[in-house]
Amino acid sequence: MATYAVGADVSTHAVHLALVGSEAVEITRVIDLQQHPIRWLGETKAFLTSLRERHWYVEPWPLALYLEAPWARAEKGIQTALEIHRIAAFVEAAAWFAGLQVERVAIPTWKTAIFGRNLPSAQSKRAAIEYVRRVFGVETRDNNLADAIAIGAYGQRQQQLTKRLAEARA
Image: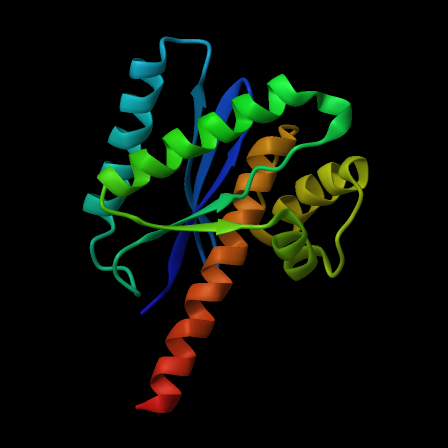
């Protein structure tokens, strides 16, 4: 049975989500944060709940959301860092309420696994867009969506590895 994972990337303007399997990006969603927080939080939870309900057969169970762990960059300012942390916490809560397992992933961890090394920000944006085009055939200029897909691919690989280790132990 195929393994899947949901990748999530947050910015101050949107939450980017992608359900990624071993061979395809099944579905993506960009949730606009310019609306009232109750509305975007509800939309996030509803989307994640629908993924869990429509993909009840995935292994391992429950479906996991891999969320880029937020961090502070001096050049972005403390206000932006706090906002990103708040949004990530809300996305994590929405995922838990939707019945998904949540894994926070450090940025260097997923970038190294996907790109072979931790690239600087500008290079990473181009690399993510190229990666999703080359591997999944997804054409996008939205580097945050490309990051969500790449994080989902990282999560899917982790799920696949966990499954193989469990089978080897059995």
